[in-house]
Image 1: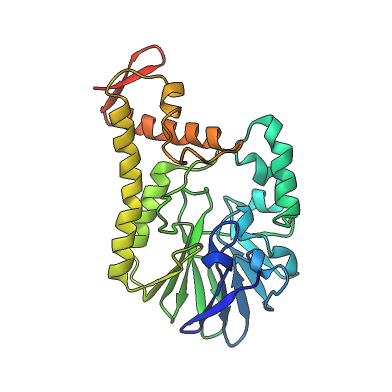
Image 2: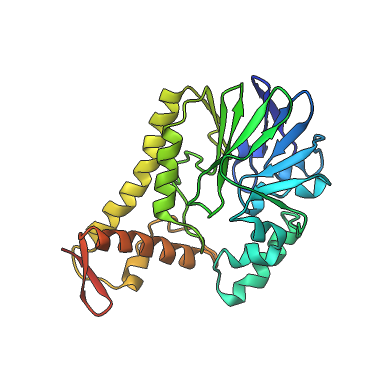
Length: 293
């Protein structure tokens, strides 16, 4: 598998296989005069992990911690995700899978992603600063994808790691039990307000140079949420139940299969439906059936 090193100032991006496409990912290596830090050790770091004094995890998903077993150093994650990093069973529960799929998911995390309990994990909060000596890494809490999802601003390089606000055409993912559409939108707005030289993502889009280009791509990413709203409004031109809505997927393409698909589609649809009802654009016209107003 391995990784490719790309330099941005003194920040090294460890680009995973297939440009970091899931199940792979992009990690960071940040060096100061006093300490070295790794962000999100991916599958590519399982066999060839660069040495580090501390590890930061953007959020508790398997593709962001697969290489964590290579490090017997302090590991830090946002307090809202710490339970899932300390316990694999908590991480799996957060996926909200049917009971008969939970054991398979647990085995997948253990066998394919090498996820083990990290009871030693420590918590950071928004604004926490890791001083490496001549270089700082500041936590930027960006919830929505998970409750604890966080980015990291590295100075003086001007590098903002935005993790799974990854700008891919798949769009924002807020389908876990602890996800939030409103929080995700607020986090995207927060990213827009941060001026940086480089913006690093966890997956295929890699690193974007310049605030203007980042904001243009962020607009496209935000647009996927708007398209989901528009799709739902079009479907509700006539009264439909939630079950009928789920037949017209908002998230996954028709060929995608798996135990995760239906729960994610249901949670995503309900989050959009609740928001549209709150805006007065949709109403429950009879028991369990919804329509545009």
